[in-house]
Each structure stands twice: as C-alpha cells, then as structure tokens.
Amino acid sequence: MAYPLTEQTSDLFLQTFGAKPELTVMAPGRVNLIGEHTDYNEGYVLPMAVDRGVALSGRKRQDPKIILYSADYQEQEEFTLNAIRHDISRPWANYLKGVVLLLKQNGLPLGGFEAALKGDLPQGGGLSSSAALEVATAVFLQKLFKLGLEDLDLVKVAQQAENEFVGVQCGIMDQFASHMGGKDHALFLDCRSLEHDWVPLGTGLKVVVFNTGVKRELASSDYNVRRHQCQEGVRAFSKFLPGIRSLRDVSLCDFEKYQAQLEPVVMKRCRHVVSENQRVLDTVEALKAKNLERVKVLFRESHESLRDDYEVSCHELDVLVELGQEHPLQKGSRMTGGGFGGCTVHLVPAEEQVQENFISFVSEGYQRRIGRKPEYYVFSPSAGAKFLNPT
Image (cartoon, rainbow, N blue to C red):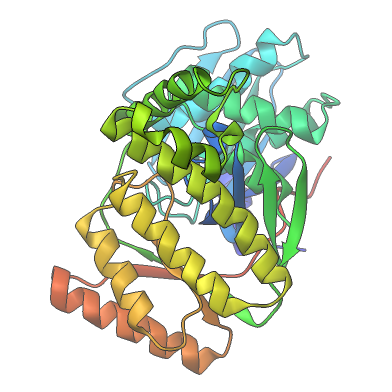
C-alpha cells in the first residue's frame, strides 16, 4: 500500500541523492487519549497511533559516512559512525544520531548510509514527531542492515536515544505507540511490565486534534522538574509503604491516607498521577462497554487534574478544551501531550457533518477569545511503523 508521505519522501531522496532509495519506512505520530505523565511513573496510558507521521527513505553507502537531508528544515547533516556528536545547531538530526549511536554501542553491524526524511506532523505540538523520527530510524536501520532485533528492542532503543542523547527523560509510551499501534484501535500499555492490549475505538468515532500554536520544548521546559517531583513523592510515600518503586504502587486509598505527609506541591503532582492511572483503567472499561458518556466525564476530570494539580496546561489549552466541552455532541475533550502548549484531543462522532460543525464551533470560538484560528487535524487510529518497497 502506498502512502502520499512515503511517495514524497522517496521522490525527495531521488532528487537529493540522484538514485532511488533501497528502502522507505514510515512511523506514525501518536495522540494520547488519556494517561498523561503516567508513563515515566510506570503507570498506565492509552495512546493511539495516528495516520500521519515521519517517513525516511535511504540506501547503504560503501563507507562509514552518514548523510541526512531533512525536507522540513531544508538542511543536510554529515557525520561518520566513529564521530557521532550532539549538535545544538541541528536538533532534528540528534534524534537520528542517538538511535545510530545506541545501535553501534550495542555492537550491531551498522554501516554508512544516506537518507532523506520528511514529516507531516506538527513539531512541538504534542503528537510525538520526535518519537516517530526515532522509531522510523530504528526500523529503517533494522531492515537496511538486517539487525535481527525484536520489536520491543527497537522501541527501547528509540526511547533510550531520546533519554540519553537528546536529553529528554520521556517514558516509553510515545515510541511504543508509534511502533506498535493498531488500526482502528487505541493501545492500552502498562508502562512497567510493557504488557499491552488493543482497545477497539470502532468506526463510529474520529479523533480531532487542535493545535494551540504554542510551542513547547520539553528539554528546556518544566517536564524534567515534574519528573523529579514525582520521585520526591515516591521517597516520601516509601516511609509508609515499604518496597514501592514508583507512583504506580500508590493506590488512591494510600494517597488519601498519607497525602498530608507530602510537601504541598509534591502532593498535587502525586495526586494527578495516582488518579490519572485509575482514569486510564476506567476509560478502557468504558470504551469496551461503549459507554461514551463515562469517557466524556473521565476526559474532563483528566484535564482538570492536569490543569490544577500537575500545572502543565496553559490558557490556550484551557480555552480549546472548554470550547470542546461546550459542544453537545462531543464525547471527550482534554489537553494531550506533555503540556505547556501543544494540542488538545477530542472524541467526535464520525459523521462528516458533525465533525465539520464541531471544528467550526471550536475554531470560531478560539478566534474570538485568542485572536487566531487554531490548526486542526482529524485522525483515525493507525497501525504502527510500516515498511515500503523493502529490500
């Protein structure tokens, strides 16, 4: 099956390097339906892969040189397998470099290659363009050099690249969803055990994502601060709950019993994570039971918790969520992603007229209150990373 993005990227490689690529790979972005800031706390998440992403086309070289061209940045980066260095002037290349370096450090038989890349996801919008690029790179190298890695190995390499080379202490959800997503399904993931299941969304819903237009850079934001505060909470709870290793081990009952022992800010952060884990489990059950009214309530509670307890929302996110919740036919509205800007996610009936009415309602309201219309995207749940014209 051909995808417009992969065809464009294959053509881009031909234009840039003067030959057809040996291999093209596409990895999707993801939108998280519910379960925010729970992944690095070994909790539960419910993302879905979307039908947009990042594509990579390339071929082997006969030397150890690596040449990358990004259509989105109109920049080229060159380095060798023996000299892989972080470069703040070309941040897009660091996601690929990190994957290459980790595979090399694991003793895998890599060689030089050249590749062109192109995406159709908004960057910095909470749809995990970075994870899609990491997964696309890992899958591309796996196939090009016949590395023989398992799916979970590729996911872990992609996450480790972002943690250790890029410097963002993300959990595993984004890379897992990009590689393991299922068509017409959300992906329920236990971030501790990595056990997972596909939860049917059916064909009666579409996922509408609005982009606030407010960019956030996770590596320089309060993302890592929130992670540290969660770790503080674990240390405090461990005095009363011996043997716990993450907030995943704290029940709502435990939290209520011991919350007064925490610093006020740490208490709020922990309350979000503990309650959000339960909301994920409740949402999975509600979706399986096709109880969309319950899903709507859980989405609202999730956003309020992110806004008030985790404090990662912003005015623009709140406006979009409020507008979404005002529409009588929506089935759930909340912020999604790391926060501090980025996107909101809304479950909307699949009928085209309902979608158009919902999008107009929210867009016009945002225009009145913020002064500009937001970008929006309508997604269906997608399968994970795909090979095209493989060798």
